[in-house]
Length: 166
Image: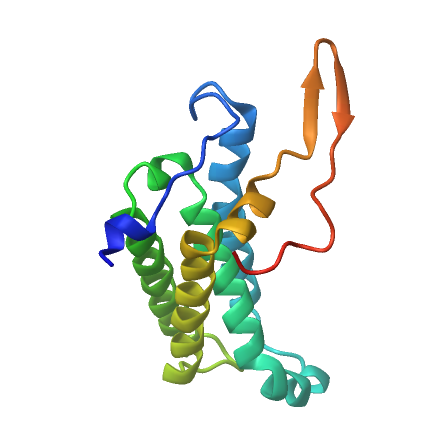
C-alpha cells in the first residue's frame, strides 16, 4: 500500500487556521514546548536529580519529542500536505533535537548524546506514525472538547477509555 493511500484525512471541525482560535493555539503549542525544552536544557542538572535522570532520560526524550512531533503533525497546514507533512514534522523535530544536543554540549553539567537524539527521533516517528495510521487514536485526539452552542459553551469529553486499534 502506498504511503499516500494510508492517509485518509478526517473532516476538521474548525475554520481555517487564520480564522480559528483553536488553530492559533495549535500553532503555538509546539513552539512553547520547544522553548521549554531549550530553557530546561540550558540549566545544569542538580546533583540529586542526576541519578534519577540517568535512569529516565531516554524515556523523557522519547515522550517529549514524540509529543512535539505530534503537535506539529496536527497543524492544519501540515495535514494538508500529507504524507510529506508527517515526514516533515518528524524531520523538524529531529533537526531541533540535533540543535538541542549541540546546545547541551556547551552547557555546564550537560553533554551531547547520540542516544538522546535517537530517542528523540524514535519518539517522533512513533507518535506521528500512530497519529497518521491509527484512525481511532486520531479521532480521539481531534475530538473537540469545548463546543460552542450559540452564545454558550459546553464541555464534551472524548470517550474514555480511548478506542482500541481500528
